[in-house]
Image (cartoon, rainbow, N blue to C red):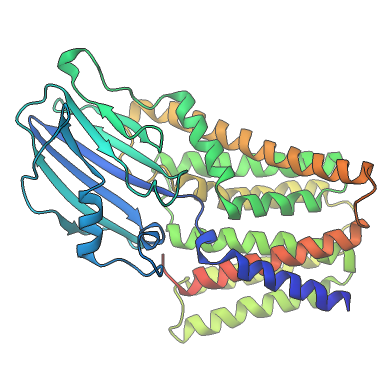
Length: 401
């Protein structure tokens, strides 16, 4: 009966997660080029966010998309809107994104303001990462939020651009964790695996080292992974930490490991038949790693140091996911250190806050004697993580964007 309840609980969580939860955060990217009185704006929006603009969640038509952002971005001289110089048009975009180009012809640059208000009425926590190229070739970064929808771009009046600084990048990192359902789920899974404070320290240390390394490698351009592949692997890590928790309580690693490997091999077979989008070698590697890891976790008595290595590997995957916020634009070389340190520090603050909140909640429930026995709690929560993780992984393996 308990097993059936666990399965139903996992499936329920997976259904409630829905496709929208598969995205790490609500964001868009704009590139503003100021060339005299001509202002060109390119707006990049993930297809998942663009679907929020329609009633039934379908991908908006090009005409609808162009018209929507024509009313939600632009340049003004004082309170007077700058007219469009040409008809807005859709331009080539990366897979899973929609990109549109707008050009405005302002009579002067005095009292020039740049505006962006897209998607805020649908997602108040939405963030637009704006990169502004000045006439002299310099770049300035700015964050548009529901509270900051306009930038005074009139340098002649003494109101210089206010570049996104260190504190703002810390805030981006924190919000990346707090608005990222998949990363929050993974952190919950890591807490489940920690039976002692020492285990938790090993886990957090390994994860921090891993994601810090790949975040730096990705943003500096040393490695440029496919975002859609990383999203799928992030989902798989969620399922794996859930499965490992079940293995540790059920003491039956062989059957669970083989079942998990069989699921991945089935996806590999479908991929070899032309169904799916993940590379076959990636699926084979994931299957082999999954089976070996679950087999080892079920027989090793002290997993602390080994889990440091494993969570480091998981951190490598999540680091690429963290970097997705920063890879959509050309980042100025002179700001990379500030961006990396600030964003990564924000991620650390966010994930430590989540871990402490979970641990604190558990301690409070135990003190109030409201907590269920640990094996039952772990199995229920872990089964939910497995359901959510596999739901996202399968969806991201076969659906682009």
